[in-house]
View 1 (cartoon, rainbow, N blue to C red):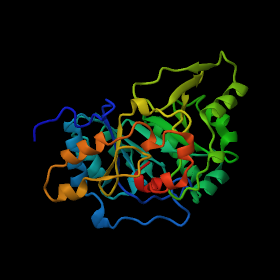
View 2 (cartoon, one colour):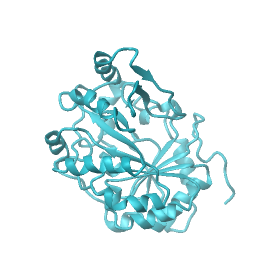
View 3 (tube, helix red, strand yellow):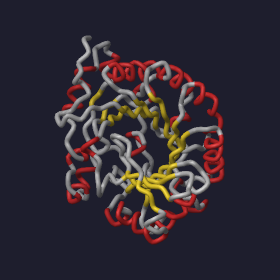
View 4 (cartoon, one colour):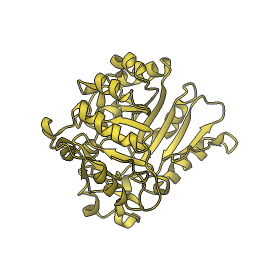
Length: 335
């Protein structure tokens, strides 16, 4: 098929060069903001992409301009064929990265290095063992903490993703920032976002402005350094002068970054989501299995992308349950 230069450009002129691929819907944690308490209906194994199908779809996106691929889950490392998936994707001319909860990542250090993975995002919502146990419903804090230190020691670029929830972990904001004092990591505070089954409401969210209130109360203006954000960055980046690491705020709710969004998401069962907040999906896997080209579906899906948060362009719309309860739970979208 002739390359269409505009296949990954939407109607607002945004070019999409970043593809997030969910490998699995299962996880070895049960984080409350990600997975409903009653669990989720998992896709049958036959409905999930095989490693060959992941590679074929990824190859098509790379052909049309994708330069970065991040593997997510669930927990991507519990997929048994993860070494093969990494090996195949490593043959593509892309920056390859992964998001993990880091519980078993120590088993994959060499596999990750061999396949050129340099950047790892670790989901960690508390530095307190009991809070960690409460939110994840698993007692694995020590393992995660030690594996974060191991990743730093092994030379990986580590980012910690912390979803902030009022009256739960907002009193740890400064603890997280001080965690960057002696470690060259980036802590990223994420505004709590609405997904099916996570009991979201605005009162639980800690906003960008509130995070900075904590920061300004604990550090002087001279100590707080605003860093240059990378192109298409989702975060506002800062560091404390003299600290080895940095911190950032991802304000998807109060200060969305939709104007420069360059991301697309592929779910583990082969559905393309043009926006994290969008309730609509486009089935790539069925068409691929029929031996038909998937480019027309990709192009149509990208062109259908709305300007802001899947059409929820106001806080009022975001607070309307029927507009986000039609979306998947986060674990089945891909973190």
